[in-house]
Length: 461
Ligand SMILES: Cc1ncc(COP(=O)(O)O)c(C=O)c1O
Image (tube, rainbow, N blue to C red):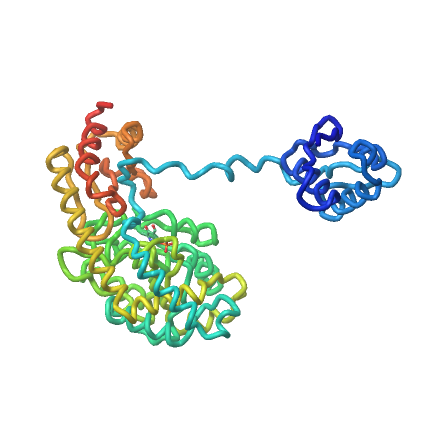
């Protein structure tokens, strides 16, 4: 039946629960959807009961319930009203919007191949983690997880990244960006106020450091990686030694030693962002810097490039003195991963599934990268690919005088996702370049992506 409540006509269902309940639900939904706007008065209970043809008690019960829930407000001597501060009927548009569709030919860097996420293996590992996790660990998140899982991960990192650590130095994180927040707080507490960062570099980590109170100091990168000789006035540096992001070079052997010497000389610390070191195609991956100087290097790693950012799992290896300082930090601000996720990774490693996945992906990315280089050579010979055969991105130097930003704009009209190298530069200048990500580009779209890129570069859309 239809009932008139203020200016709104509401439909009161004739069946499904008691009349009090149906009336309560109808009125609540009317408030939630905005049909009964904030501040509007409800009819006196006697009048509404008369309209429905029920006892007045039914209406006072419904009003009472909604007052208790905070949808209505009752004031003695005046009408019951819809609460002035009711939840907005329409959520902010930003929240409602679905994520923008990714372009069909997505050459933006950042993602691994999402289609080859090992769903059944991960599901099986997670199932075993759920069945086997010690009951006590169901109490919550743990920075350190079980000793067994930590030992498994530590052994794995020793084997694949040649880190030097014992399991007590390993903390589990929800990813490198997340951990950078509390690491920044820790470093501030230890007296650091500035952090040297590579220029160019990924804005994510240095942005977190800046917001946490560490002033980023840009340092040049050349074909040997970070120019260590330019480090001045700092005792802390954030670096991507295995595969510089975005230039794609590795920190040379001479620079690695120079960096460790610097850290020792200034009593400093090096944060090693080991974000995609699993993927090297022309040689064995360069060992971690942490292995060379465990008392000077903090290593950050995560599953974001190897599996998926959605797993939200990473690790941090810190020198012992920092672990002690950590104990002085308000541990409540540290968000650690679910012990179930940590156990699932341990299962993946113990069964060899994780390394098998890495091998498959290495092959996949190596081929895709070659395919992209070949396609670029065919469609856009005037541009030059640079950087190592590694990782999930490829820097592309454009002909001098090209405006990279215009190419990105034209690319968008061609359903082509592009990112200009300018996005990663702190100081202006440098050759016009793009940073092409091929991690999540379907093999079948590589050639067409290169063709469209050539079209965007030549200004034809
Ligand atoms: C160079 C670099 N470092 C670190 C990260 C952070 O990874 P996460 O916070 O997902 O662990 C990314 C992510 O894209 C990256 O590109």
